[in-house]
Length: 354
Image 1: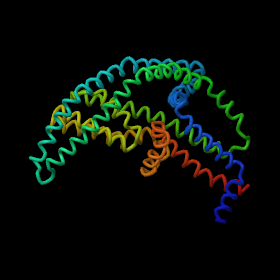
Image 2: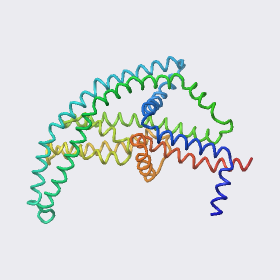
Image 3: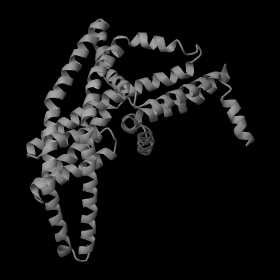
Image 4: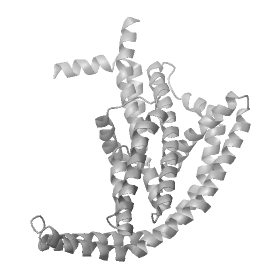
């Protein structure tokens, strides 16, 4: 017990270490207990990080910041309108069509399952098939109940969406326009001696900015490539499935594996076992291979490399704590932990040297 107490006194005798620990605990508590209320602010911060790169690019070319912010914000609003009135209606139609086709798909799948004992009697029995069908029916019933509950809450969800559509663009605009004023206001409450916190923040700020922008372009490129491929093969629900594939890159390793099932299942129900399914599967695997081996190293070359085990652990931990945002920011948060771990002994050696 004595070595632990000695380490605690030695480590937290530095005021900067105490300040950094307290700041991290406050930020953790705010996101933990107020994350739902601050969801529009968090989403707006993500978008502002994304757009800040374009603003900085225009500033480097001699454009005044206010004019650059206005130009980038107008482009952002144009893209938002295209998404709302171009992509979302098509997604809604395809979701409705898929829901209507589900009974036929379930019946076809049930017929295939019932034929399995005849084809492979030494592997599977009719009782096992009946048990599997019963489990699937119960799961589909539970899914139907959840869909019904979502439809009953659609009015409240529509109101929330309208509020977000008004608040978020305003927040994004002011985050971009008044970035320096907001940072100056926040730093007024910080102590003057904060070199350790500044060192960690500079590293994390660079990592989060690179990660958010890189992840955005990865989603867009993977979605576009998947949509072009699915449309070329004539796959049903091409827009819906390509959006799922694009969003799957938010969760490294796990997302690509999970989204493979709906793609293959829809293709199988459309074509059955045949060359079309085989060629589509090959094309899909090529997209995933190019994403992992070409696109990710190209877009995230400046992001600190983390071991796959560290990434998966970060996804599980932060996703369990904060849901979607925890999953999205799993890598930056893991980078924050890594930056603190690396800056801590450096600061201690510098303090000891002085």
